[in-house]
Image 1 (tube, rainbow, N blue to C red):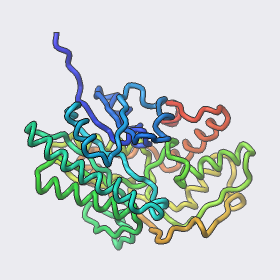
Image 2: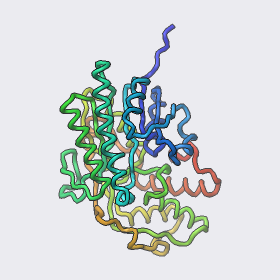
Image 3: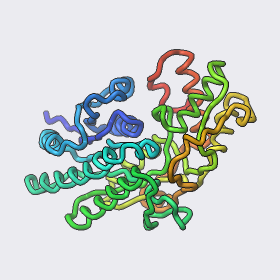
Length: 340
């Protein structure tokens, strides 16, 4: 009897927020999922609660030979390149590392795909996550797939480089390579250094009497915030099309950090965040982007994609999850992934 198996997906950076949600989504669809994590990564070991069923392997995304060997062994149908340097603020102090991991690593992957196709007559479909930060100070609100880039950080500049590389290799070499420009997307899996998780954790600690105040930087910035699981679903949909395209993945509405604070504190029954929030000029970025929100019309029309969770529900879910973490002492649990 012949055993019929589903497609195989390779997810680089599977231990990150997006990698976890995407891996679990693909497993639910019958995929064989192989994920890579950076050797020595501190985030990957704690993700075991989320990655049951995933074949997790160490691989630095800058290792061209290692990536090539992995492809020859797996012959994956789809590749989702979710590994990389993800912090906008931290990128100012590690610009060279960011350029290597977010930019040159993508160039190496695309070159490996061309070589793979020359040897085997076909290449896996490739997804590259772009970032709304690429648009920087944009004259166009909301941004669309055709909005020019004006990156305002080392992180944004490297994501723009990788975005244009992916488009260029698709158009020049005929690779099935799609980009998804992802606006801010959150979940309880956000690392602690991101402002949304810093807020949800801080508010949870205030709720439990473990701290009195929360210190932040610029409260006037506005972002288009969505739910990470929704954005992972959009990634998969892009690689199911007949032809590769570029998509904006967003909710279409921006909210200020002050709005986020009000929702977070309202979750624990407090109506005035100003009593608990302090601002520190040292937390301001050298060149911050004031407002960004995207137009998801193309994704809605061509992918039949819509966000499922509201801004308020996302933030409430993050705060309640952090309260449960603090009470139980359990940092990672599948029960934290989705609101009940």
